[in-house]
Every structure is written in structure tokens, then in C-alpha cells.
Length: 563
Image 1 (tube, rainbow, N blue to C red):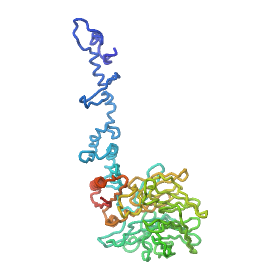
Image 2 (image 1 turned 90 degrees about the vertical axis):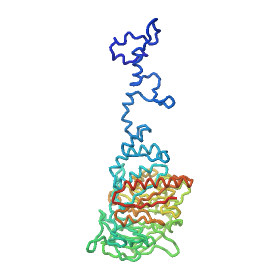
Image 3 (image 1 turned 135 degrees about the horizontal axis):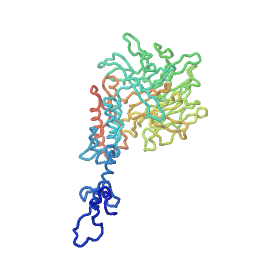
């Protein structure tokens, strides 16, 4: 019975008991007829399958493809509606269910199969966030999976951001301060936080923010300021009607603020906020801060020696200020120095660093050692120089000991801030761009262009490890970070201005935002014509997405370059 259908068991025997035995010679004079069991075997093969080694083929003989039995196909029908398991030929049909069309160029698909599956799987959830920055960020991130993989950042004017770390999860990032100055035309009706470069915290959790304002020559006069905010991000107010009031607004030379450090009250001295300018001018604003003038402390520049201040912190053990000086403006080679300032009586000492290529950030670690963020070679000659690093500096030895903590291959690119939360976890803020300062040749095509991020640093591991804790697109160009209890506060001045572009208008005009697009040079074709085609295509797709998905009441500007 091996050549007859098993379906005969479900039929009355009277229908098939007189059938000829398969394979037996026909009786003389008997009519040739197909036995019922043999006929049903055909249907059984198609419907439920028979393990006889004969494939089931569908289609023309030349293009036929094998398929499973109908019951097996029906049992796996649900897989057709899953973007990750449906056959590739079904993806356009499934994408049409979520109003999605895959882009093509001259009839050829532009996306690889993985990107088509990813976008189809996630687009419906993003539709729910339409009109919000989070939705636009996620939409752009889906479309940026291709070969060029540009770094796309939406600057909606959020100046300070709150980051709430959650071990084992991506951090929640929220807007702490998004309200800036009130401007009508070129007239400033009320000042406000514009482009914050640095942030520090006081003993009560209040925030001190250094604001670089708008560049000289901008149509709107918004100078560099220092702001004091409460822990919730509310301004100090003054005047009638009440308006945001900066600290020490009448202090001359308080320009280009790059770092702020708060020295706790000690030795009968009140809590004091120290303000450092890029050129090395150091000012002090003691408590209660509001209405108190900024007192010049010293000038850290020396005749004939270029300076370029990048960071400042307080040594909690001694109360000394520790200032990180790059030693010359980029792209000049760095000659890094740590300047120790003892405020009272004033004493200044300088210690040269020998293992640092591009100093970007400084923090005091447990035990009094220092952690220094190094951006590494800013014009790397190859992938081996793409990463940044962290250095531990031990001041107990003479000379100081400088030790790199991370392997050459690590996720850091430009570590601009280091902070430790109340639970003892150290976090590193990374801009993700190399070079950090926009290049004069092409500021938007970089050796490295990755999304800015906050990383959790585990110093107990050997070697120490970094885990990214924020989603892509949360920051534009973050340069400062401070821990307030279990929360991190990040300052983001937005895309730096470059020749021919003014990316700061979203900071002073309501309902306007900026989109900056950076490309990694090695991900672009070497041929100039092919490169221009890829750049045009990427920028065109992104522009179309932003125009379609942005809130209806907004306008936007583009910051990028096209060959």
C-alpha cells in the first residue's frame, strides 16, 4: 500500500477494495483505469506532502520554484505578515500596508534587504510620533542605514537636556531648557540662554551655565553670558516685567565663556562660581551670586605662549581649581598643560602633559587622580587613529603618570565631558565628530561622523568598558555635562557656524529649527562623480523626509555641504 494514498482510510472500503494493485500486471481484457488510491495520492502530495523525494514545483518549467505542501504553507502563513520573516519578494506588498514605498533609482532598489525589512517593521510606531522631534529622529535614523550612513541631527533649540540613566536600558533624555531669548527682527526684547557651552552645579543643585551667545557680527546682538538656573531649569528673574537675568551682566571681558567650576564653601569662604574664558581670564562670583559682580582673579595666559582653555574642575580635597589648557587654537598642534590655581592666597602652577594629543575634558576621579578626555589625532591617517581615549593622571608621582585606560579600538571619538552620578557611576559625553572643530576644507565630510552619545564607563573592568546609554539623534554638538544627584545635565550649543552658514537662527527665532548632516569620508565613493551622486541622493531623501514629517507650523534650514 506504499504507493496508494493514506486518504483511503477515510473512505468506505466499497469505493476502493476492487482497485487494481499498484505495480501488478493488468488482467487480460480488463480496462485500464487509475486506481482511487493512486489518484488521491496526487492530492495528498499537494495538500499535506508525502516524503517520496519528489519536489513540488510551481510555475513554468524554466522558472519553477519549489514550495511546501499546502498545510505547511498555511501553518506558516503568519510569517508572511512579519517583515523579518516574509520572503523578500513579498516585502513591497507588506510595505504597502503601512503606506511605505521603497526608493528606487532608474528601476533599481536603493535599499538593501535588511534596510527594507527594518523600515517596514518600525515605521508604524514612528507614525505615532509624527510632528515630534523623537518621531523625526527615528524616521531619519531608519533612512540612514544605507552605505553612506550620514549623521543627521535635528536642532530644535533645546539648550539644556536632562539625562536619567537606567542601568541596562537606554537613558531617557528630556528637554530641561528650550526657551531662549525673545527677538523681534534684530531687536532683543528679552535675553535668555542661547548657545550653552558649559554647565556646573552648585551645592543646592542649581545650575551655572556658560553661554557663548551669537558670534560677533551676527544680526542679533546676543553676547556671551553666565546664567544661574534652579535645579528645574528656571531662570533667575529681575525687573518689571520680570525677565531672565544673567549673572554679572556688566562685567567687561566676560566673553567667550568656556568653563565654569563651583568651589564649595570652605575656610570661611563662601561658595563661589569660577568662570573661565577661552583666552584664560578667570573670574569669581561668590554666593549669593545674584546681583554680585564678577571679580577678576587672574589671567592664565602668558606672554608669547598661545592658550586655548578647554575645561576646568575643582579638586574637592584641596579646593584648588584645575584648568586644562590646549595650548593653541586648532588646527595648531596641541601643547596641553594642566594649570593648578589656588585661589587664596593666589598661586598658579603649570604641569605639561606628554601623552595627550587633543585635550577635551577633565574630571577628578576617586582618590584624587584625574580623568582626562583625549580626542586623539584630529586628522587621522587611518582607522587606527579614529578613536579617542581616556587617560588617568596620577599627581602623586614626579613627573605625573599618564596612563591610557581604553584599548585603541573603542567607541569614543571626542569625549568633551566626564561626570559621576551619586551612585558612583562615571559617564562620558562624546560629540562623535573628528575633527571636533569644523574643518576649513569641508566641515561636513569628516574622517569620523557618528552620533553624539553619553557612555557609561566601568572602571572596574580590565580594561575599562564603555556602554552607550542614549539613542541616536538626542544631541547635536554637546560640549558640557554635570551630574546633579542621579541625573545628568548636558549643554548643547548646536552646530558651530562655518563659512557661509548661520545655523543659529533656530536658537533665536520661534518655530525654526536646523538640520545638520555629516558624512564619514570612508563611507563615500572615491570617484567624485559617484560621490556627488551619493551626497545628492542622501541630502535629497533627508530633505524630503523633514519636509513631509515636520510640524506644520515650523520652518527649517539645512546645514551640510554638497560637492
